[in-house]
Length: 503
Image 1: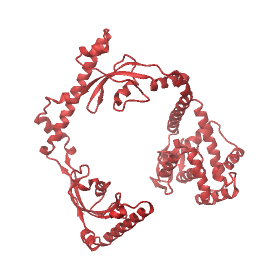
Image 2: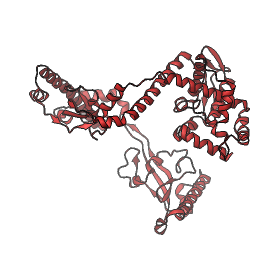
Image 3: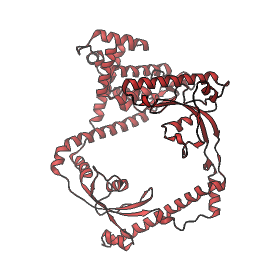
Image 4: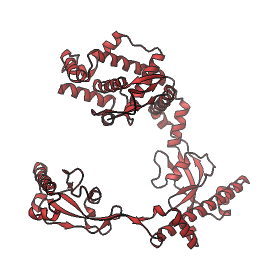
């Protein structure tokens, strides 16, 4: 059985990829349960009732399809990042549509495909009856299935494969599309930019007391002083000599510390309601340290903030479970130490007074009004430049007449964009030569982008890569077309589930 699973895993890595398998197992683990929302009916699809028994069987079939390595029934598009309910509806939709297209693989075709499944191959690489029997005993029988279920699932896989072939055949990528894409990514772009800065518009903005009070009253629930905490802790750490260890010796030393930390946690659990944290630590000859009070998002002044995960672990504690991280047997581990934490103090969050909230309100109002003034000014400048260019002036002269300074940026290709000009790069993909962009807001202001021109491409380089580019574009287009087909097919199925399957 071990060899069988290894063979299956190798094949899945090739066809589906490890990430897809992990994602699938996450969503469809072995602990599925049905939450009944009323009655015995699971829901309706294509106008017919689906029973809970039927949908539970479909769920077991889907698990078996993964075990068999059926790459079309368990394709990423049908299982990855989906709820179990959605994945099962997709199975119904695909099978219904395949039958509507008249796709009905024969028993001979299904039997031949089943015998060629890698999961049934032995050490010599050919079909092995004993391996198949082991699969039936270990995977099928516990789910209430027999060997015949393999043929049914393989037939469905053949159906799905043919259906995908039909859908994919509708996708065409033309040479013109390939060239356009290559030119977009590889032609050199020459741009000019007019920058606007928020800071230039902040001067003179002074919110009135009435505006401040109105904002506070309208958004009172947004202004609060966050909860503050402090924790006591003990440390189980490597000594100076142990810190120099490497390999198995270092792992053994850390394992010893981990065991000590877990043993201390168990003592704390036994002493709950009887002894304080400090008393249990004292009895174990462990020195106790205590932090200053700190906020989860503001650890200024917290010496322990440099310990990875310390503050986050402190905020997982509660009055009911004040010791260490969650769950109980998981002490916080740093690079060469383990920490057991205890919640020793907590100041609840509270609403801020108007005076306490005033600095935040003033800053927010000033920023909001500066951005509004900046945006209005940018639109005014853009209109003036556009009018001047319409009258025959160059962009540089039109910008100068509008009182603006223009920065000519170094040329770049979309395939190698400049690292700090995301908005400029994005705008360059949408502009024609000689066109001025709309105002593009950014974190500290915004820009107007003018496309001065695009250079030609290296024809020899294009000839070398156009085949691969066409294949890539087709794969993306095929995926997009299938996702849209599946979306519309699901809509036509009018599936209404009255139970929720949980993994």
